[in-house]
Image (cartoon, rainbow, N blue to C red):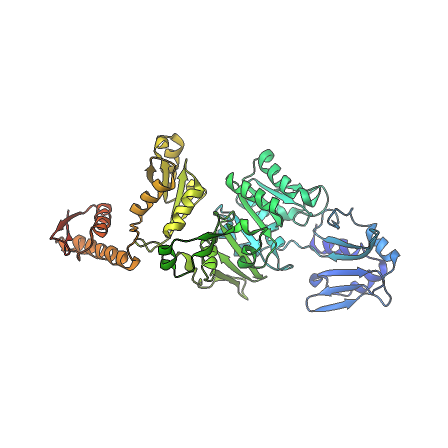
Length: 497
């Protein structure tokens, strides 16, 4: 259906006298028409309002519209078949309709290019922002792009028919994505689970996650390896985090009591708020305006920053006047800035194979590593597996596909995971981070000189715990280190191959 015909379908549902006034108005800018019993009907445009009559709307005017739209659901919403327009009702105490809001629905193309790189990663993505900013519009085009351009099996859970329009046949704006309607708003969580269990989607798209049951359903979907893209009630990440019903979407919050040493290290009180679990959504996008986004590429890092009194940071993306999307410099997400003493580059991505994901997340968080636990083996730089499962064919398939490094632990326990990660990330508890960084930097400089000049290089004296770290780093570079001297000046000499 052409754009002009589509908007005319909404206009033609109005009384003739209102259609006549609207005929000379710029319909391409029309936002909504409001009709309240006993008040003059209005058409609303960006920045202005147009009166559509000289007399108040009567019961017959409302009945005229009601006869031309669909049946109202339990949430007092309906639509016009094969369009994206939404009609919402206001009722009196007897259930009679005394007001109508006819909101124009448009399939706007080009909005998804601001997040295209995010959705193609397969990560779970949550969109938040104030009402009317374009969350549903972006969600609708995301469904079309994933289904038609990326060839994914996409199911849209459409509670109020806002994504794919009214009627049994979905609007062409969602492309070849399939649509599941929800018989009652309170059943949205059940339909979300039904979509996974019955229709084998690769992606599920859902609008307006707003209850605890829906948040739990979202986590269930994410844990089954299905990509989840949705919107939630909230304007910012911090706003969502402080919502007790929906905070689980971004990891949740609980209160913990720290030991004396840990509290001194952090410089905080002993009782603090911490993230309770891995976030359901890997990334969060705050839609600021139609042309500006704030992207949190790692929800866990952003949430940890907020809970430690910092700012969530994020990458600001703006659509310029030429239509080109520009990413502004990211603000600092402080939670992970002091995490990894040995590898200051990109955060290491770890996948647990036959191990508890929650336990591994907790160890990574407690050790403040510059790492994150991923849900898909295809995203991993490192796979940690239970020793009894290292011969699994599936595991070796993952390793061949990704080129990830394999490490093993004997038991599925936090103690085993902790020892392994302390070794891999050169973490020495009780040692100041600056001391560890200096020892690691000393090794890196020695490796550079040995490889470039082919001569032995002496390192600065270090305690035995740091010398063990330096030894492990040298092994990774295929170099040998010899401990010489006596305490407290015992140190390593790095020899060329």
